[in-house]
Amino acid sequence: MRIELNRSSQVPLARQIYRALSDRILSGYFAKGTRLPSVRQLTRMLQVSPVTVSHALDLLEADKLITRVQGKGTFVYEAGEVEVKKEVSNSPLQFPDYLHRSQAKHYSEKPVAINFSLSAVAADLLPTRELAENLRHLAQYYPEVLAQYGEIQGDLELRQALSSYLMNEQIAVSPQEILVTNGSQQGIDLVARSFIGPGDVVVTEEPTYAAAIDVFRSRGATILSVPMDEEGMRIDRLTALTDEVTPKLIYTVPSFQSPTGKVMSLRRRKQLLGLAEDLNCLVLEDDPWSEIYYDETPPPHIKSMDHSGHVIYLKGLSKMLSPGCRIGFLIASVSILNRLITAKTNADLGNPLLNQKVILPIFQSRQITPLLKQLRAALKQRRDLAIKLLKQHAPQGVRWIIPRGGFNLWLTLPPQANTIELLDEAERHHLTFLPGSACYPNEVEWNHLRISFSQVSEEQLRTGLVELCSAIASYLAAAGSRKGTTPLF
Image 1: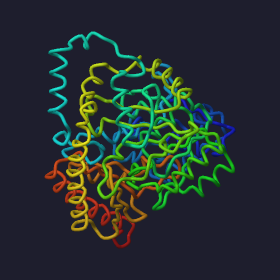
Image 2: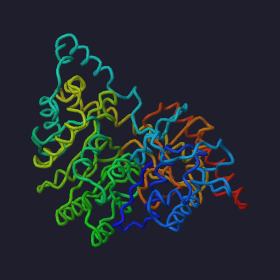
Image 3: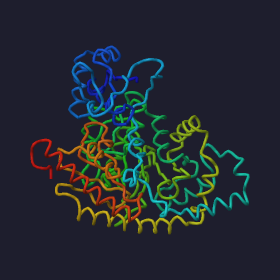
């Protein structure tokens, strides 16, 4: 374990240490019961005072992430309830690493019967037959595709088809301004690799997409977050923040925001673009599912209004078409895109050509439009079912945002609740969800959770939500009993 502290940051050192250790704990790098280095060891390792280390441990203990046992040490979670693991040391044999956090991976891969954590689409709703036919056609008539590398920037035919598709999205872009990526996650990583370094300030919404936090933290960025209201990111709070610091990048999911499902208004989108131009900073507009709307289309993309080149637009196709093909793309001005292509070259020398050719006919034949219409209808039905079930079965005190698009529901429990603890109860019911704490880069709120209604079948949705509501009720009742009070609902 290597922890790098930014001594010129406005974030206090104790808070940086707390964040580094909590990131690793919540990402599963430290198993329950693992003994952490002592105060003396951390003081020597980090070259800070014992008081600073003790303050950081106090913060971790207040969040119930560690337990201190007199005479034995400091342990992850409740040491008395689990087997005590070996101490984390700086031994070269353990190959010290610079990993920060990977909560998205940690929470999405739990082996349970019903997975509400993974924000994806059930296989039966995706165009697998069309893709399989495309694959068969390629194998029969164009087998040479299997023996060719693709262009690092992406297959030209696919970029041309995407350029035509984007005209419907009010984004006028040439194929030369498109970079095909290995999913949207790689797009975030390429932007971070190209433009973010240790100490650079990245601004996000609060809460935000957990896997984006993972990437920005891995670059050593200082992540500052801005709260949202019903119009999305509060630009007044962002403006006040920029009076103190100048961000290198503003990351936003303006349409059906991840994880809350909120939509940034057109007014706010224009304000954000204007502020980015004034500050001369980049905006990374992440658009995983703006086409998946249930009531009305969201406002125009920020990129569609960008005439100065400050916006990088990121689009993932995996969720709408094929997770197996893992295709996404970035749009940026040529001067910005050239640097992203360099980063892409260093990363993987380009996407597999076969994957790109498999999805190409869906765009060339304009199949994408009816496919998206079908997907919207199916997912709207599941969203409505999920809301109906919550209204019928959720305990008193549980609130949720009704999303106007996207795949997710954002639930809020009473303030004293901790959904990390609730997750243990849910797993006993053979289901999982994403704890909201994974989506906060700074001051964590522990009483939220995100569930995806798109990944499961309708039968699983019915069964799972009833079980989840039962687990929430049991947890809230038990939490109230432990505190010697009435239940938390």
